[in-house]
Image (cartoon, rainbow, N blue to C red; front, top):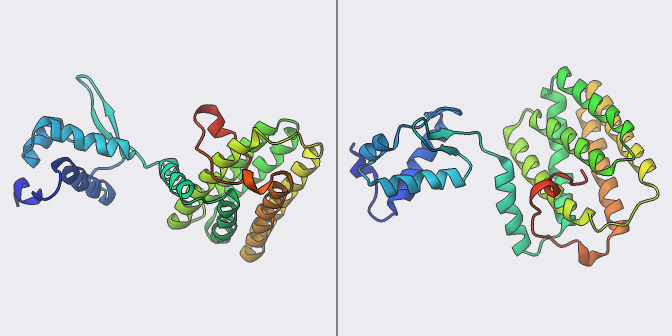
Length: 262
Protein backbone atom coordinates (compact mmCIF):
# COMPACT_ATOMS: atom_id res chain seq x y z
CA UNK A 1 0.00 0.00 0.00
CA UNK A 2 1.49 3.34 -1.03
CA UNK A 3 1.51 6.49 1.05
CA UNK A 4 -0.83 8.12 -1.44
CA UNK A 5 -3.53 5.48 -0.84
CA UNK A 6 -3.21 5.91 2.94
CA UNK A 7 -3.79 9.66 2.91
CA UNK A 8 -7.44 10.35 2.21
CA UNK A 9 -8.19 13.46 0.08
CA UNK A 10 -11.15 14.44 2.29
CA UNK A 11 -8.92 15.12 5.28
CA UNK A 12 -6.20 17.66 5.93
CA UNK A 13 -2.88 16.08 4.93
CA UNK A 14 -1.08 17.08 8.13
CA UNK A 15 -3.93 15.67 10.23
CA UNK A 16 -3.70 12.37 8.35
CA UNK A 17 0.04 12.10 8.89
CA UNK A 18 -0.38 12.96 12.57
CA UNK A 19 -3.15 10.38 12.90
CA UNK A 20 -0.96 7.64 11.40
CA UNK A 21 2.05 8.48 13.54
CA UNK A 22 -0.13 8.83 16.66
CA UNK A 23 -1.53 5.34 16.12
CA UNK A 24 1.97 3.96 15.61
CA UNK A 25 3.22 5.62 18.81
CA UNK A 26 0.27 4.20 20.75
CA UNK A 27 0.96 0.74 19.32
CA UNK A 28 4.62 0.92 20.32
CA UNK A 29 6.03 1.09 16.79
CA UNK A 30 7.92 4.18 17.99
CA UNK A 31 8.96 3.68 21.60
CA UNK A 32 9.28 6.40 24.23
CA UNK A 33 12.66 8.08 23.80
CA UNK A 34 13.01 6.95 20.20
CA UNK A 35 13.56 9.41 17.36
CA UNK A 36 11.09 9.43 14.49
CA UNK A 37 12.56 9.22 10.97
CA UNK A 38 14.07 12.43 9.63
CA UNK A 39 11.81 14.93 7.88
CA UNK A 40 12.94 13.95 4.40
CA UNK A 41 12.18 10.31 5.18
CA UNK A 42 8.69 11.16 6.42
CA UNK A 43 8.14 13.35 3.35
CA UNK A 44 9.12 10.46 1.12
CA UNK A 45 7.02 7.95 3.04
CA UNK A 46 3.83 10.03 2.91
CA UNK A 47 4.49 11.79 -0.38
CA UNK A 48 3.99 15.26 1.10
CA UNK A 49 5.72 18.62 1.23
CA UNK A 50 7.96 19.80 4.06
CA UNK A 51 5.35 22.26 5.45
CA UNK A 52 2.74 19.47 5.71
CA UNK A 53 5.24 17.19 7.40
CA UNK A 54 6.27 19.86 9.90
CA UNK A 55 2.65 20.75 10.64
CA UNK A 56 1.93 17.10 11.44
CA UNK A 57 4.86 16.98 13.84
CA UNK A 58 3.72 20.20 15.49
CA UNK A 59 0.28 18.67 16.02
CA UNK A 60 1.82 15.74 17.88
CA UNK A 61 4.13 18.10 19.77
CA UNK A 62 1.13 20.13 20.93
CA UNK A 63 -0.47 16.90 22.15
CA UNK A 64 2.60 16.16 24.25
CA UNK A 65 3.62 13.06 22.26
CA UNK A 66 6.74 14.51 20.64
CA UNK A 67 9.63 16.70 21.64
CA UNK A 68 11.05 18.66 18.69
CA UNK A 69 14.76 19.41 18.71
CA UNK A 70 16.26 21.71 16.09
CA UNK A 71 19.75 21.63 14.60
CA UNK A 72 21.96 19.03 12.94
CA UNK A 73 21.37 16.51 15.70
CA UNK A 74 17.74 17.46 16.08
CA UNK A 75 14.54 15.69 15.19
CA UNK A 76 11.29 14.48 16.72
CA UNK A 77 11.62 12.32 19.82
CA UNK A 78 8.72 10.35 21.33
CA UNK A 79 7.98 11.38 24.93
CA UNK A 80 5.60 9.86 27.51
CA UNK A 81 2.15 11.50 27.54
CA UNK A 82 1.57 13.89 30.43
CA UNK A 83 -1.83 13.62 32.20
CA UNK A 84 -1.58 17.32 33.10
CA UNK A 85 -2.16 18.16 29.43
CA UNK A 86 -5.37 16.16 29.49
CA UNK A 87 -6.31 17.85 32.76
CA UNK A 88 -5.81 21.27 31.15
CA UNK A 89 -8.33 20.61 28.38
CA UNK A 90 -10.70 18.74 30.71
CA UNK A 91 -10.58 21.67 33.12
CA UNK A 92 -11.51 24.11 30.38
CA UNK A 93 -14.40 21.84 29.39
CA UNK A 94 -15.66 21.74 32.99
CA UNK A 95 -15.27 25.48 33.34
CA UNK A 96 -17.32 26.07 30.18
CA UNK A 97 -19.98 23.73 31.60
CA UNK A 98 -20.13 25.79 34.82
CA UNK A 99 -18.85 22.93 36.94
CA UNK A 100 -17.82 23.55 40.54
CA UNK A 101 -14.84 22.53 42.64
CA UNK A 102 -17.29 20.55 44.75
CA UNK A 103 -18.22 18.43 41.72
CA UNK A 104 -14.57 17.73 40.97
CA UNK A 105 -13.94 16.78 44.58
CA UNK A 106 -16.95 14.49 44.69
CA UNK A 107 -15.65 12.77 41.56
CA UNK A 108 -12.33 12.23 43.32
CA UNK A 109 -14.28 10.68 46.20
CA UNK A 110 -15.75 8.20 43.73
CA UNK A 111 -12.68 7.11 41.77
CA UNK A 112 -9.74 7.49 44.16
CA UNK A 113 -11.05 4.99 46.73
CA UNK A 114 -11.26 2.49 43.87
CA UNK A 115 -7.59 3.18 43.14
CA UNK A 116 -6.77 2.62 46.82
CA UNK A 117 -8.63 -0.68 46.76
CA UNK A 118 -6.67 -1.67 43.66
CA UNK A 119 -3.41 -0.60 45.29
CA UNK A 120 -4.19 -2.81 48.26
CA UNK A 121 -4.24 -5.76 45.84
CA UNK A 122 -1.36 -4.84 43.55
CA UNK A 123 0.86 -2.31 45.34
CA UNK A 124 4.32 -3.27 46.56
CA UNK A 125 5.60 -2.99 50.11
CA UNK A 126 8.31 -0.65 48.80
CA UNK A 127 5.71 1.86 47.60
CA UNK A 128 3.72 1.41 50.81
CA UNK A 129 6.87 2.24 52.77
CA UNK A 130 7.40 5.38 50.68
CA UNK A 131 3.81 6.44 51.37
CA UNK A 132 4.33 5.93 55.11
CA UNK A 133 7.54 7.98 55.00
CA UNK A 134 5.78 10.76 53.10
CA UNK A 135 2.94 10.93 55.65
CA UNK A 136 5.37 10.86 58.58
CA UNK A 137 7.48 13.65 57.07
CA UNK A 138 4.46 15.95 56.96
CA UNK A 139 4.46 16.13 60.76
CA UNK A 140 7.58 18.28 60.53
CA UNK A 141 6.09 20.82 58.10
CA UNK A 142 2.63 21.52 59.54
CA UNK A 143 3.67 25.19 59.93
CA UNK A 144 4.47 25.49 56.21
CA UNK A 145 1.18 25.23 54.34
CA UNK A 146 2.52 25.31 50.73
CA UNK A 147 5.15 22.65 51.44
CA UNK A 148 2.64 20.54 53.35
CA UNK A 149 0.28 20.70 50.37
CA UNK A 150 2.99 19.77 47.88
CA UNK A 151 4.03 16.79 50.00
CA UNK A 152 0.40 15.67 50.11
CA UNK A 153 0.18 15.95 46.36
CA UNK A 154 3.27 13.76 46.05
CA UNK A 155 1.56 11.20 48.31
CA UNK A 156 -1.54 10.98 46.14
CA UNK A 157 0.41 10.79 42.88
CA UNK A 158 2.65 8.02 44.23
CA UNK A 159 -0.43 6.12 45.36
CA UNK A 160 -2.44 6.33 42.14
CA UNK A 161 0.56 5.82 39.84
CA UNK A 162 1.13 2.47 41.50
CA UNK A 163 -2.47 1.34 41.90
CA UNK A 164 -2.14 -1.43 39.31
CA UNK A 165 -4.87 -0.14 36.97
CA UNK A 166 -3.89 2.12 34.08
CA UNK A 167 -7.49 3.31 33.62
CA UNK A 168 -7.84 4.32 37.27
CA UNK A 169 -4.38 5.83 37.20
CA UNK A 170 -5.31 8.09 34.28
CA UNK A 171 -8.67 9.14 35.73
CA UNK A 172 -7.22 9.83 39.17
CA UNK A 173 -4.25 11.79 37.86
CA UNK A 174 -6.43 13.95 35.60
CA UNK A 175 -9.15 14.65 38.16
CA UNK A 176 -6.54 15.13 40.88
CA UNK A 177 -4.64 17.60 38.72
CA UNK A 178 -7.81 19.58 38.05
CA UNK A 179 -8.65 19.64 41.76
CA UNK A 180 -5.13 20.68 42.75
CA UNK A 181 -4.94 23.48 40.21
CA UNK A 182 -8.39 24.80 41.04
CA UNK A 183 -7.73 24.71 44.77
CA UNK A 184 -4.38 26.42 44.27
CA UNK A 185 -6.25 29.40 42.81
CA UNK A 186 -8.74 29.40 45.64
CA UNK A 187 -6.17 28.89 48.40
CA UNK A 188 -4.56 32.29 47.80
CA UNK A 189 -7.83 33.93 48.82
CA UNK A 190 -8.50 31.71 51.83
CA UNK A 191 -8.24 33.31 55.26
CA UNK A 192 -5.66 32.19 57.77
CA UNK A 193 -6.81 29.07 59.61
CA UNK A 194 -5.97 29.22 63.33
CA UNK A 195 -6.64 25.47 63.54
CA UNK A 196 -4.34 24.66 60.63
CA UNK A 197 -1.87 22.57 62.60
CA UNK A 198 -4.49 20.40 64.28
CA UNK A 199 -6.33 19.89 60.98
CA UNK A 200 -3.10 18.90 59.26
CA UNK A 201 -2.33 16.39 62.01
CA UNK A 202 -5.82 14.93 61.64
CA UNK A 203 -5.26 14.53 57.89
CA UNK A 204 -1.95 12.76 58.51
CA UNK A 205 -3.59 10.34 60.94
CA UNK A 206 -6.29 9.55 58.39
CA UNK A 207 -3.65 8.73 55.77
CA UNK A 208 -1.75 6.57 58.23
CA UNK A 209 -4.98 4.73 58.99
CA UNK A 210 -5.41 4.03 55.29
CA UNK A 211 -1.83 2.77 55.07
CA UNK A 212 -2.43 0.44 58.04
CA UNK A 213 -5.48 -1.06 56.31
CA UNK A 214 -3.49 -1.65 53.13
CA UNK A 215 -0.72 -3.30 55.14
CA UNK A 216 -3.34 -5.56 56.74
CA UNK A 217 -4.66 -6.51 53.31
CA UNK A 218 -8.07 -4.90 53.85
CA UNK A 219 -8.69 -3.02 50.61
CA UNK A 220 -12.29 -2.12 51.44
CA UNK A 221 -11.33 -0.52 54.75
CA UNK A 222 -8.44 1.29 53.07
CA UNK A 223 -10.79 2.67 50.39
CA UNK A 224 -13.24 3.78 53.07
CA UNK A 225 -10.45 5.56 54.96
CA UNK A 226 -9.38 7.43 51.83
CA UNK A 227 -12.97 8.40 51.10
CA UNK A 228 -13.17 9.81 54.62
CA UNK A 229 -9.92 11.71 54.07
CA UNK A 230 -11.29 13.38 50.95
CA UNK A 231 -14.63 14.07 52.65
CA UNK A 232 -12.77 15.73 55.52
CA UNK A 233 -11.10 18.18 53.13
CA UNK A 234 -14.29 18.85 51.18
CA UNK A 235 -16.24 19.59 54.36
CA UNK A 236 -13.50 21.97 55.46
CA UNK A 237 -13.58 23.66 52.06
CA UNK A 238 -17.32 24.22 52.42
CA UNK A 239 -16.81 25.69 55.88
CA UNK A 240 -14.46 28.43 54.72
CA UNK A 241 -15.72 29.26 51.20
CA UNK A 242 -19.07 30.70 50.14
CA UNK A 243 -20.80 28.82 47.28
CA UNK A 244 -20.17 31.59 44.74
CA UNK A 245 -16.40 31.10 45.02
CA UNK A 246 -16.52 27.40 44.18
CA UNK A 247 -16.98 27.74 40.42
CA UNK A 248 -14.14 26.58 38.20
CA UNK A 249 -11.43 29.20 37.62
CA UNK A 250 -8.87 29.63 34.83
CA UNK A 251 -5.87 27.43 35.53
CA UNK A 252 -2.86 29.12 37.14
CA UNK A 253 0.53 29.05 35.48
CA UNK A 254 4.03 28.70 36.85
CA UNK A 255 4.77 28.04 40.49
CA UNK A 256 1.22 28.69 41.65
CA UNK A 257 0.07 25.67 39.71
CA UNK A 258 2.18 23.46 41.94
CA UNK A 259 0.91 24.69 45.30
CA UNK A 260 -2.57 23.18 45.43
CA UNK A 261 -3.86 22.01 48.79
CA UNK A 262 -4.01 18.26 48.27
